[in-house]
Length: 90
Image (tube, rainbow, N blue to C red; front, side, top):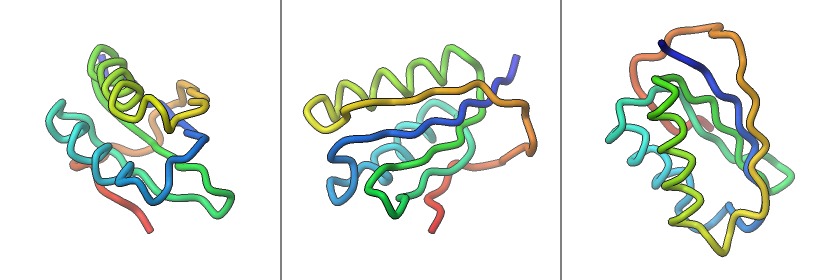
């Protein structure tokens, strides 16, 4: 069953390739949605996919950016749109 997660990552997550890595990991897992930098230095993500793939995406990001991510606030949200690709939003 397809789920949708809205996630805010905090810490040193801008200027380290976070969005590009998130996009690559998401595409490898077949997860769709978007990721973007926020003015306060955090990164926002909306990810849609099988729950196991969303959990794996989070695990990969937390492992890869172990020293950078201070927090990841995850909320399951109702699917508002169906995305066909995972992209970097500006």
